[in-house]
Amino acid sequence: MSAVNHSSQAEAPALLSIENIYLLIGFLVLFLVVKTLQDKGHPKRYTTALFWMLFGNVFLFGDLSIALIGETLTYQWVGVSVIIIALLAGMGKVSMGTYYTPSDEELDQSAKSIGNKLFIPAVLIPIITVICTLFLGGINLGGTYLFDQNHLTLASLTLACGGALLVAWKFTSGSPIQAIGESRRLVDSIGWAAILPQMLAMLGGVFIVANTGTAIQDIVTMFISPDNRFMLVVLYCVGMALFTMVMGNAFAAFPVMTAGIAVPFLIQGHGASPAPLVAIGMYSGYCGTLMTPMAANFNIVPAALLDLKDKYQVIKVQIPTAIALLIINIFLMYGVIFND
Image (cartoon, rainbow, N blue to C red; front, side):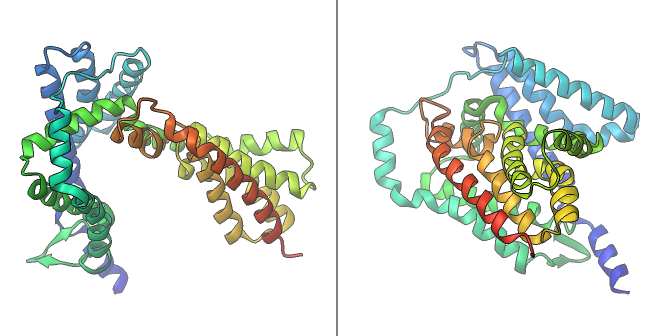
């Protein structure tokens, strides 16, 4: 009975449904496209607008396309769009445009008037998200939930961002159009790297379907003895870091490296304790996150937000810490995962 109730609850309509969130993202991206096309001083406005249009139309018209032309053609259309997006980024056809830049006096005045209140909207986002997820997720208005029950955290995050935006408007006396316009400058500063998380998530799925873990297992047996515990631990930790650097996401690297090394060699072969093994394995992957521009949301976005001249400065500062933590993870894993 509880399983049935849970299923019906998950399928119930919601105001902040995943479909509505996708539409919101699509409309925001469409606004960026229009503003880019209106920017006469943009050196690559047509190709930059095409890049973001191809990205945004999946959010706007994905469900409609499936209803009109079917899943197969829609998937093929999305696949072609992804290829064109990659080509535009690879050929350097995505660039920054022209934007209003406040003077130093205006910036100083704004900093003095707002002060540390500037951090309040940013802090509100995780606070509101956690509160909504833990305590307000079951709000029901006449059979319609406020939050999507299948994507509760994402729906809560959407509401949190909206609330933080309202607070930011109050502090800055800005307008919605000004906020969205500023988002264009920010997105253009980040460039193609802004969509890396989505692209790499898809790539991770491709690797899993292609049984990459099995291929890694075969390669390991060619160079390392299955009886050499320490080298297997080193390979798993370093492999997680390196594969994360390629994928840009430890969650994408984790199933591949765990299926290829941790499960067959360490867990099944040497009886390693799975819980600490996979936990430290993920920590090792995060070491790779600190050292790669592919983790754009961690390393490239902060550089853009801080207006750093060197967009790789964040990575350069993090590398010594990442290497030290990786070495610690190797010896920690070797010391705690084996029961004998």
